[in-house]
Length: 425
Image (cartoon, rainbow, N blue to C red; front, side):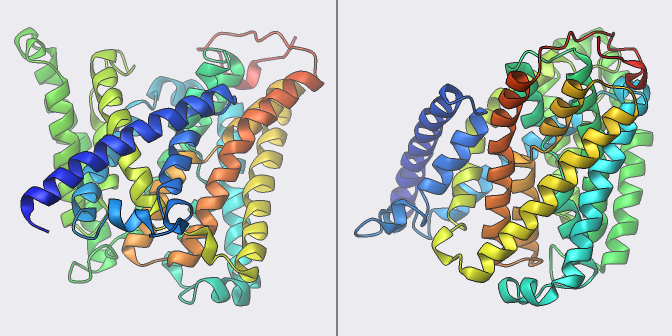
């Protein structure tokens, strides 16, 4: 296949992926699910799980080996932008003033599933080994802890907006706690994966030291310099988006060179990017969100091409049930208990618990990073993708069930009020 043929097929694939994802996303919204669920399903459907099982294996014709590197590069650019947004949308003001409920939810909903998953790796080592031959070791245990405890902040925010919970105590506690958990989870993952991304790179300890130094430079030197630059009126006329995009890509390149996946650099750049009065600037958010939304379906397809539910055997199903139990019970129970203990009402507590159980796209990014780093193989990857889909799909029905079973509670309290002092009426 020559260059012109590859170029033509890449263009055709991009068009097909975007349209298919748009249609499935619209269908998901009509079914009361977040758009990302439909996009993930579209990506899986175009892979070996569905399209690849049709006569002639159309998946291989649509996505031949010569095309995949180009689609992968575009998808990684989209993921870096997405991770930039995930870091940029974290509200430092809410992190500082979230109150006891936020801290309690973040601590319990992160530590309990992380602890349960780490214990399960030891107690059920034979089951894990049957699906993942390389199970075990420091990196694998830390990865499983993050995989079972992470919350998809961007998907959670979208659900909060769609359900009319934005600005309410329920929405504020859930999103702020998810922000805290995201930061901690990515820091743990960065420490676990340091030095594993490239076989000829620095050792994990050297990578970790370099990452810490790079992070210090970003926060202590780059952030103040950008803040001064953007305060100048002539600089603002040039637009912040090219600067934000360049910061995200540059930071992603540095972390990649230091032995980490580029997504860590994108997330770090989002944390460092200056905000107006500590609130994300719509001038930066909207163009970056539109770009990520347009390209992210490519990531779902490259993920779907690695996912084949037909390879799931009896051991895989048992492991899926175990991991689902740890992920769901480890989130719902502790989050609900933390909210009730710190003064939130029963309905508010149930909603927060349902929301922080959402994993979605963030989980898929974690899984792809682990797969590329060689921490997990295709078997466990398939199991964990199913866990991400099921836990995200659960959120909408759970919120609907909560609304039906309990009389509506009047959401009161201000965003700047400590969450621990918010009382249900």
